[in-house]
Length: 244
Image (cartoon, one colour):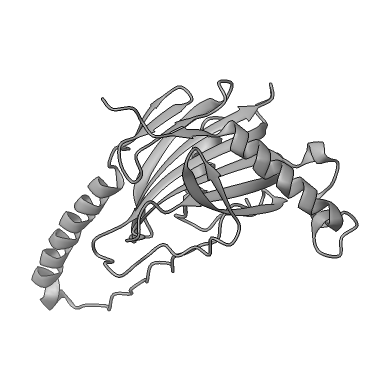
């Protein structure tokens, strides 16, 4: 699935040594400590989403405070929240539009991220060379296209989104094009809002390989990209949430 580049290195893996029976007490102590740590990590991984969703409307009270309204025919597939690679608190919400066979035609992926306190120096640094403003929010913009059958990196946000979609019984079209919008709320750059809007590529009449540089339809990508960004900007109704 073509969506966003990986920004985090994979977790390091450690191998234990073979230990003789004389060290069994130490092993048991370490095992108990590991169980306690694992339970804590599991609890963290199972934290409930902070944002609220009512149909096609999402409300976030922080990082950033925002109201996101999507087309009313989009179907909400649920949310997930977990420590992304142990680096960032990640919360994902997913909606789709699909045909009667549950093949996705449009996808709306909304993601909130915040670096964990254990990574105090980490920052979200995006180029903001191609930008747009939707509802008063500035976004870094990047569009892509490609096949959907490439397996996502294990434990990535893409893998979690794929699980949400497939558990709900939906299928990916063979190829999609998408635009990724990223908003960094403040100068600390410790949090981000990412929205990905994706469409089935088939209705364009061209294949991904034909849009690649040197492909017979490569000259069409600029117009397709612009149209995609414009449609996404129209479908995403963003505003500041009203005071409660």
